[in-house]
Image (cartoon, rainbow, N blue to C red; front, side, top):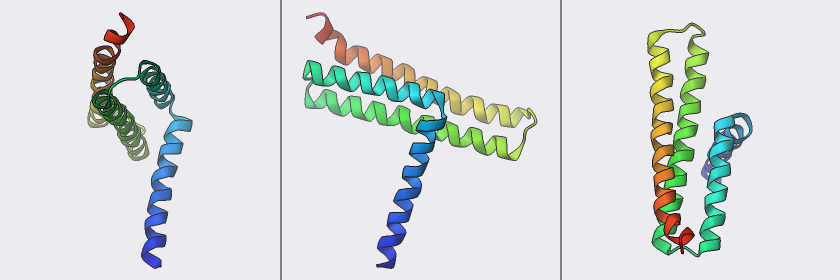
Length: 119
């Protein structure tokens, strides 16, 4: 029973992190909005199972990277309020990872949905 409670607590901690990011981070709200729009399009256009898999994986990658970026930013801010070159680099690199994933998500969205739109 104790292991089950520990697992449940870990799940709740993870859920708390997701909720915190969704409530407090503007960019997370933007990513979630675009993800919701993409999923509405997916239902409307009746995309294939393969397209669903790619879409869901892409959404998961962007959302996950945004949460990692947020965690890195918060840890750096906790450690130092000064603009240290290494702190700046850590934040910029994490933000760059999210940017790359978001650009790729747009490309995936165009590849999946464009053929349905032009029909």
